[in-house]
Image 1 (spheres, rainbow, N blue to C red):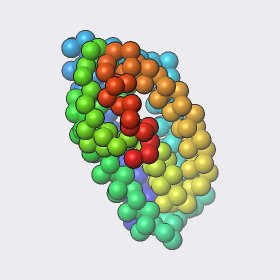
Image 2: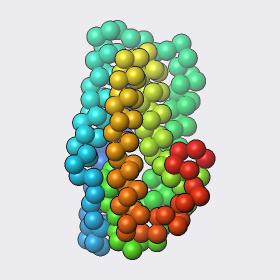
Image 3: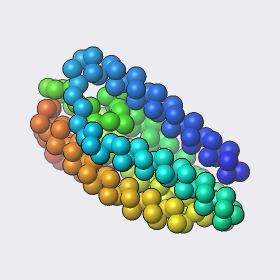
Image 4: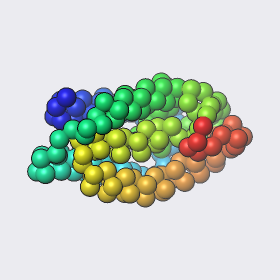
Length: 181
């Protein structure tokens, strides 16, 4: 397994997700969806871009090799991708990288959302550890994970506030934990 082949896969996956998010955004906005969290969204984008830059820099300049535990870490990465696809597919046109809420929507927990409120954020948190550690890029893992926790602490509060104000979120998700199934 070469780093740059793996990295290319991750980048292509992110680009495909951005295209899907853009299509879903257009669909939702045509139906009256409102956007929240514009102020912090640029920091999420910046963090994800920096994550990719940092990992390339650390692996390349510090001449990192795949971890001796790479088969286990690769299996964990593949598992997170199944969770990612399940979360995105479960939300369908409502999935997005932005906070877009269609007022008066009836939210129904399905897929991984039956077990936790934020499975997609679990995937991102796991990836911010797994991908760098897969290539022994420990600085990237620590720095980007800490920054991600900071950004998500803002993001999740904003998202839940918007959903509570405009949908049946509180009633539908009151007995479901944020992160623990």
